[in-house]
Length: 324
Figure 1: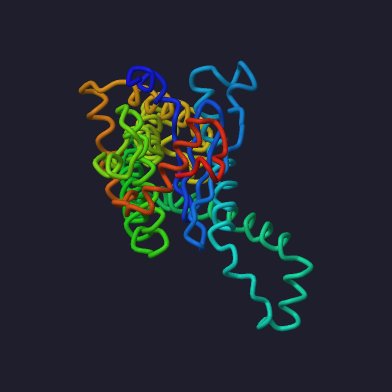
Figure 2: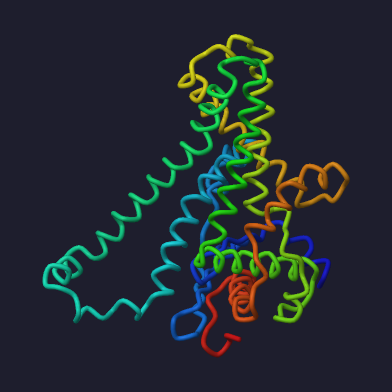
């Protein structure tokens, strides 16, 4: 039984949600959410990965780009669903709303939420662009006064890493985010428990590590490091890039972003299957960052992780009789 599980574990992954966890496996995805009533609602969905829909999407490097875009799209969808489920019954009281608010809620409630979701996503991408693309380049230009041009990409990358760490540290202090990070920890611990062939119980899951080499945090950190290496290499190969204006330089970095995604995915994929010295060295920064993005989960949060993982392994939505 242990051998069978170990041959499958690389295809199981997850994502922390609002009061919930989403797990993905070969058969589809399962989402478990802790409802306001205290019950755990689990739903399994048969979903075909995008890379399985087209042979081109399975090619090395290409599959990393496709997987990243798919993760953003499906992750956002599940995040919104979990937010809605975890607040069911908490916002149903419309008696105290004004006539205007009640009219807006009755006529544009769902559309308004979708609109707000789109605006939030756009603002999120805009913030990411400013923080991790424009700001590092601006700071290097300002602090060096356009000297040390051949090392521009290296210093820019160092600043990007610093901004990334500071951003995560600040965000991790928010109460709601801390709870999401606890679910993130439960997701990792549950998967580790499965990988080791242990029974999925709260006690077994609690004993596992919360730092996983295939984590999205590690992927993001690897992408930053690869971006530093690739942009620095480009400046060495094409010295003229060191003198271009900031807008053109940012455009160049955006153009190499798909390659960075592809290489980052291949490394995370390799790291998930190997445990040699090279992997340990390259994976160390990402694993260290998980000390920020994961927190030790409580038993009730672990129960949600177990429910999601069990459902995705079974390939079905649990019935009331089979729920634990």
